[in-house]
Image (cartoon, rainbow, N blue to C red):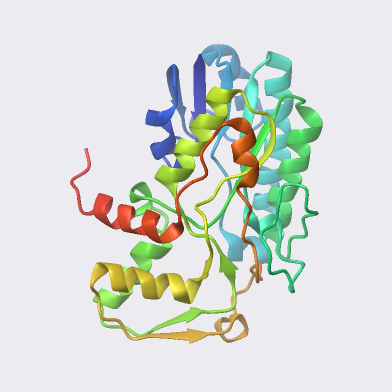
Length: 288
């Protein structure tokens, strides 16, 4: 099997590539740019993959609220064209989506299943939902994977790092940290998500699947656990989303159920505190 990975240099793509079976073809925006549709068919013809995993996305959530055009160009129209091209070429498309397709149900207290109706509350979330629907409509053999709160060692630099690295960096500077305590989700380690996605690809799974670590927490609870496990003393206190006043709304509850994975023979990822501990150990090791 020949598997192409778009967004291979990102934190999920970097963990996914070594876990896939067969020949893996890493692709970047220089190869396929979702905002430049003419690049898609040419590279599918040149690389001739059996499967293409799309880890690429426009994910500047707050910027998208003020200027949604780039988000919809990449996450919506670009994904639609990618799905159409893959369907025409006989390439299975695996598309990575997000928990941000939820959020409208502010009173939710039980994990969302794949059968629950989405309801995004931001332009970014809506752009990702458009990409999901476009994939499902254009490519009958699609696999859409929703995940949540990604962090991985390959995201410790680049576009602002990840939440774990940000917390440790700001605490190390002795600055106070005010973290929202009314948004509940599941922070997910890219190594664990990648292992499950690779398992779905090997199983030939199709349709919609949720892939996150298990359990849930607020961002404040995650920050507290980061500092506890890292042995860091931090000036940490909880605030509300209203106090944080981000330009884009975030889902107040976006915990995803992993129960469907069992039907595909893929083990559900471990609880998020265990995954966080593994991440902290991995980040301390030298990387090639």
